[in-house]
Image 1 (cartoon, helix red, strand yellow):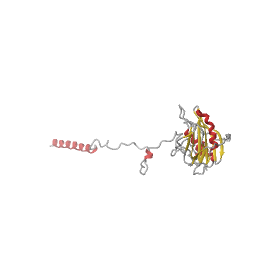
Image 2 (cartoon, rainbow, N blue to C red):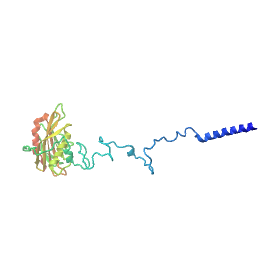
Image 3 (cartoon, rainbow, N blue to C red):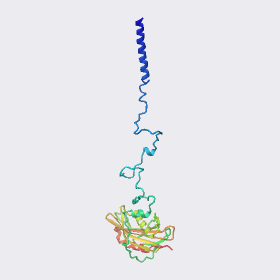
Image 4 (cartoon, one colour):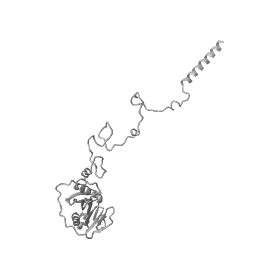
Length: 272
């Protein structure tokens, strides 16, 4: 009987060990790996719930330029109270004027008092009427001829030349830029606008600046590479909702017609 009891005790002990192993080990070996894999927090969590990151926080915006050091706040293009010079050809930033953009444009030098007046020739007797701008402008003699005006309201051109797309052009239209308090400033902005009708990389050199009846006239040289054009703008109040603009330009390949620029400058008048 003692042998039987000893055998039963051994069996009971083995059963107890098996139960303990079952209670300690997980029911399936993959339960531990099924949990989320997370990195430990960099700092102990606060007592409140952690805020969920917004899209802007998870995907920061690129800065507008190289950073000079760590920033304590949102990135900005200028220090508080500092104004950034507007870049040429770009749209105006809030708070900037058209004249500030003009002064920042390296293609257009400052118009100083050293720029002299030019003698104005007697106007001719033949005129082209522009009823939209309220101006009457000289009808230039041959080889000038009238041409399809769009996008202007009147247009006269010199003949095309072989090997180049540049040729003399004389146009009128209502002022295509913002009018300023001073006719002189308005003419400066108009001259800058005319660079859109010259080759890329063109730069202005002032030749003459003077008032005309009801407005202002500027004559200037436009250089581009090894070539240049002579040009002039006349801004004049023709009694319409906007002043009128007369613009003439002649490349150096047609320099014989440079004398016509003076005819334009002296011949623009109010229609009526």
